[in-house]
Image 1 (cartoon, protein in one colour):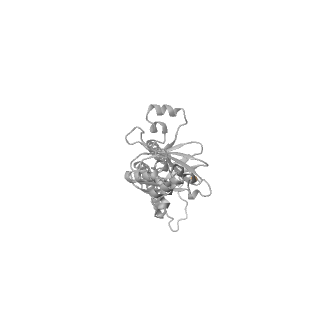
Image 2: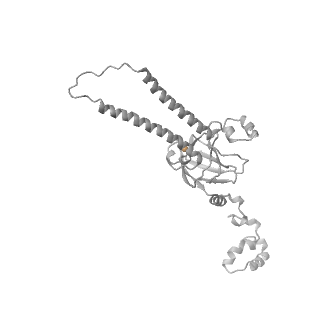
Image 3: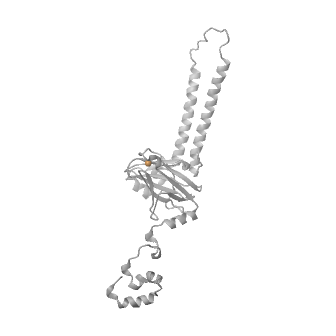
Length: 288
Ligand SMILES: [Cu+2]
């Protein structure tokens, strides 16, 4: 198994280990009996007689039906319990704790999804990211900051709520290190929540055969320290929010001739003051 990048992922690993333990035990018992019988009951040299006729054994039949039934029931209840704890069974109540939100949602379709992302009113509110799956890419939009990215950056220990959509066909958002997978469905939103407690880069894989380049539909989840994430957020905020000094385009109509020509004239050794005097005498000519 790849590294577990969240506390919730460990619950999934626990089921896996539990099932592996039972399966390994069964394998050893069945194969052990088989090998013992092959050796212990092998044909003795010169023995041409038939084996004894055995009619069946009701207590034995009951026993070897009951044992697998009990095992399957234990696994079913245990995995149901983990699925429920990860918010898979009741997306509305586990996701929106305030009564208004529950009332609001009851008029809509039941949300599809899995994973816990906490409470919006708590002191660690979730980071919300809109995820769009399309042939053949994932697009991540951060409605709280306006960032649009092809990679998913999140801070460590902060709950994350992904609102997943698909624009064309079925896709599936899968991060093996989070042990979470959620279908992206055209025309129907789904939610995936997680809180990663381990910094690192993890692959985002499309787990639904979605077309010819399905295999290339990959991205990366970056779980970063809060400081590194803040830097990334600052560096990727949309340009509209940056100050005028950082913007590339300036409307030259709002500049005087002197201001407009200053950057070019300075290279030629002409002072802006001289330029201002010159252009004020030739106002009618406008910009050169
Ligand atoms: Cu896909």
